[in-house]
Length: 236
Ligand code: SF4
Image 1 (cartoon, rainbow, N blue to C red):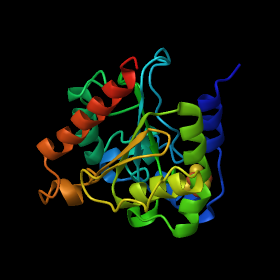
Image 2: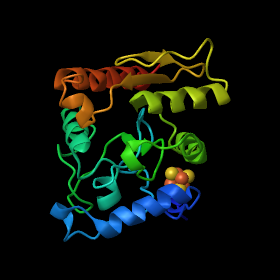
Image 3: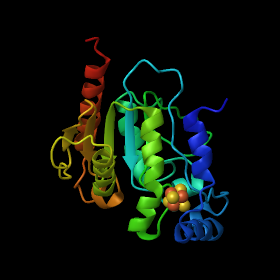
Image 4: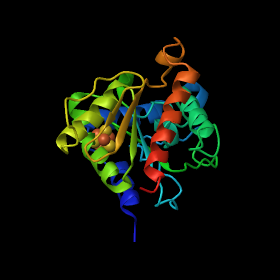
């Protein structure tokens, strides 16, 4: 029997709900970038990246990104793989013990995640990294199902749009006891069901090249995620 998360991934990969994004991803995959001319671009919606499926008894972290990069995950077919943002993310995940290696370059590079999964607000790369409002709404159902099936104890939203999607999900599922928390690097929230949400600046070049997000700032978010997961692991 296909596991629900794998079944969901199959559904995501064949999704055609957003004509603008589907057409753009395919155009990018056809035209390519000079340095990746030899690559066979993925060009489809990018599925959730799931951990090794053996750890049902421990708390889990769900990382929510914005969308695949045109020549990153839209090329390689794996979340945050083959681009600069991914270099930051996997380095931090490896340091914090959530990934077995500090780099993620292509589908067959041996990367595995431990007790964390990576999803996105939109599973298709958008032009200028900006999905439209309707496209975000179209894809929100996949986020809801990912949360339902993966059952994370801690959420980490990378960037303002991911944080808003998380707050929208919490509002729709009556998980907020007060007003939604505003986005800021290091912002956090405890939901009604005891689960936690964390916010971080997105590790995009716009943030990392300008020093808005530094390596210690990013590492501290994963240290906090670890701390929160350890609390959920403790026997009560
Ligand atoms: S962005 Fe999401 S909803 Fe839209 S086509 Fe891609 S997978 Fe489907």
